Length: 194
Image (tube, rainbow, N blue to C red; front, side):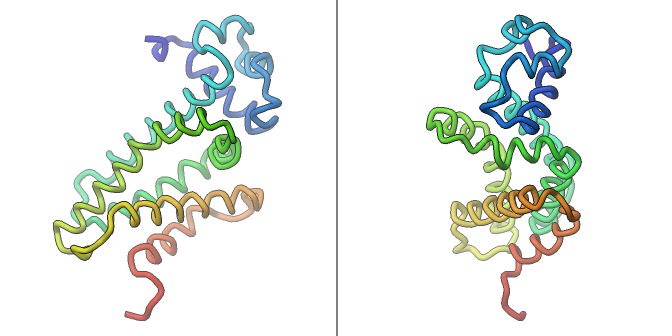
């Protein structure tokens, strides 16, 4: 398994920085290799091409991310608490790694359809986690029985995603994690006075 090879993560982490600093199209494999401290040819022992690096880094980071959130929410009894923790951890992960935030919010948005399909495939695990929280909330009576899970998931993911993109576009000048409770509150309670 190539993921267990020592240089795999070294290359992935270097790619995150190279792509964030230069943009996907300008981040040549040679630049990634240089940042990783490996020969250009070494990259091809692990990845087919630059697109493969981008997809692999997203798979790798998203995989860790979902695992981490599953650990954090395990044992929490309410769906509301789980949703708040999901938002908070999403923001925390990206504010802890500003280069990764640039890559996920800007550089992964390639116009190449095939690439977009692969990225959506990777996102599935995360979206399923959101669905799971919503279903639990319906089952335990926290969320209404008529809740449209697909639409609710789009709203949750879209809101989280747009909030992070705005933070990246503002050059990460403010504390993203601080806004997590507001975002969670709006998602759970809407805007009306209760």
